Each structure stands twice: as structure tokens, then as C-alpha cells.
Image (cartoon, rainbow, N blue to C red; front, side):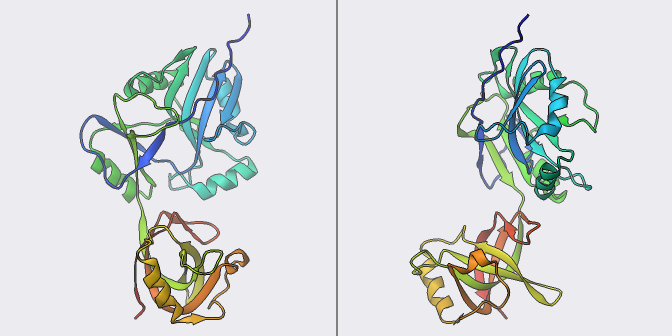
Length: 303
């Protein structure tokens, strides 16, 4: 008997970034994973794993394939996130990148079921899709590379506070009864990030190609008595602020940076005396030593 047709890739629903947790018991809350979005499409032991843009990443996520091959004799299309978990139980993006290169253990956290045995489930309420997904996955040992993404209904602020206190990236809030909206960043899925916030020394600025504007600040941090480069921040600097900032940094411009800066940053870089301090929110410091998802919050004169 021929096997059922492998389901086609379906565009992902995306979450809208907001800065407040929604209220009410018509929302459920899941952990925001720090990994790669992935769609697993199955037909018996045939498995294809798609990236967020619809690329076939089955070879990249090869570690997961044997577990998916045993999941069902029918068909399924599962939305989830591929992550690597560090020793403290947190999803760690840097660890994930290393794991993919070395083909080390990774985990697929499944949070939505888009198709099952030929039935398109996207018009069903989310809570029904999650119930069917949990039944499909069944009991999972902690060591299993496929895990069900659990949720809590209501109590959003408490969930968020616990996630941030535990060092996690944030939460995803989803309306219980919402349909799955492929290809859409809709208000029925919201993401709220936990962010770190620190002050960094401004060592220069990045211009545009014409050298006429301020597009970002180059940042550094003092570590064990030495300045360490932390990348640059442009997000959060408004067009209204740029002319004033440009006038200020031009007054303290110097020919060379006060520390070693990556070669690719020197082309459009201009450098200043380290007299200014920038207030910056960010999610983490990468293995390369630069800020991930930095956002500018303010600036002051260094004391």
C-alpha cells in the first residue's frame, strides 16, 4: 500500500513584538525559545525539516530525524523550535550553533500542529490544536529529542517574571481560540522579551556610505582593567536625535580607536575619546563578545 503524500511546507505564523504582557484568561503563555524555528513534515518514516524561510534543513537537523521517523504511521505537520539546552536548563543560542556544527544533541520543542492525517488543522482553535499535538507526541522522556512545549493559561505577568528571573529569553502569548494564520505576524501571537540593560563606553560612531550621518554608536566595556569591544548599537536612535549626537561626537573625534576594532567595522567607523556613556538594553553577549539585539536607551557624559 503506498504511503500517504508528504505534507507541503506551510508558511509560519509569526509573533508580534510588544513590551507588555496581555491580561486575561483567554491567553496562554509559552516559553520563548532562543533557537531556530522549524517545521517538521512527516509521512510515516519520511521526514523533512524546514527552516523559517521554507528551506530544507533536514541534513542540518539530522540529529532529530530518527525520533521523527518513529512518531507516526500517518502524516503530520508540526511547528516548533530547535534549541540546545545548557547545563542550567536554559535554551542557549550560542550552544545551538556549536551543536549544529558538531552534530551534537539538540531538542525540537513542538508547540503547534498544522496538519494530521490529511486534515488541515489551522482553522481550529489553538487550544484544540495543542491538545491534539500533545496526544500525538505522547509521553516523552526528558532525554527525548522531541519535546512538547507546555503552556500556562492566564497569570501572564507571573509567568513572565519567573522566566526572566530564571535567565530565559521571554514568553510567547497566544490567544486560546485563535486560528493559525500562516505567513502573518498577527496580534493573536505576541512575544515579550526579557532584556538586560547596562551602560557601555562609546568609542566611536558608524557613518553612512557618504560619511555624512550617524547611524550607530561603537561600544566598549571595561573588563579587568582593559577596554573590550562590544559591537555597535543603532536601534533606538531616532532621526531627531542623530544631528545633535553627530555634532557632539565630532567635537571629540580622534584618528584611531582606543582599542582594537574588527576590520569590517573600520571602513565606516569614526572614533572618539571615550568620554560618553550609552545606556543599552540587550538580550545577551555572544561568544564573539558583542551584544545581541542591542537597543539604545540614552546617553550621558562619562564622569
